[in-house]
Length: 277
Ligand code: HPA
Image 1 (cartoon, rainbow, N blue to C red):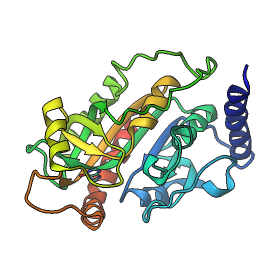
Image 2 (image 1 turned 45 degrees about the horizontal axis):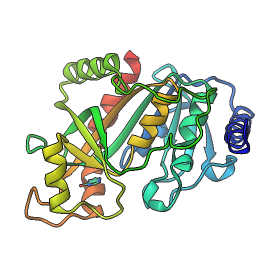
Image 3 (image 1 turned 90 degrees about the vertical axis):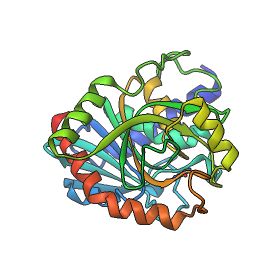
């Protein structure tokens, strides 16, 4: 074991110990609440709330609307841990830092993870306000959270990515959406680092490559979840048409407004999915 390896394992252990010292239940499902979804955390029963800044080695988000707290408790009679707020690569954190919470969630015992985000639509069949189940992703950012020494106790050196968006969970999400009469699509999510929105040429490139939507999060967490053996479901809230698809400039206000408009539908879907998981 070299020093780096010992450091990561020790850090995970310290964060886990701190959290376990405050909770009585063992979480089975992790949920990352993206833009607009944060108030789902208020529905957790017997909730224990822990600020990221109090957890050893957790980083805090600098983005408005991304409060950093972990909420652990009962939701739809399941033991859950919700992450209200996440940290992004564009905030200047390393890949290891932004995926550290996923490692800790795994150490706490989760076997399933739901990741949510806001995304821009590249495919014209998607429109703002719609939800998209992520059935695959494209990571062309050129960075990867698994680069560096592999920690065999955390996962294999070369993880398979053919089923990283778990087929059974996708089926559950589609069935629940159908029953609740929520219109939902499926598609490929392209990861861009941000923080600037993409150029028109970049969106064109992503469209040619087969992407349906684009965003600045989720993929690093999903890669680490896969490495850790966690089954993952990803859902994007389409908040805008991506750069150049319409003739309008993009802004963060629009993203927040649309995610707020859609949040009740999104929350209903998540409740239904967790009930069925
Ligand atoms: N691009 C990148 N990230 C995003 C977008 C977008 O158009 N909308 C919401 N998050």
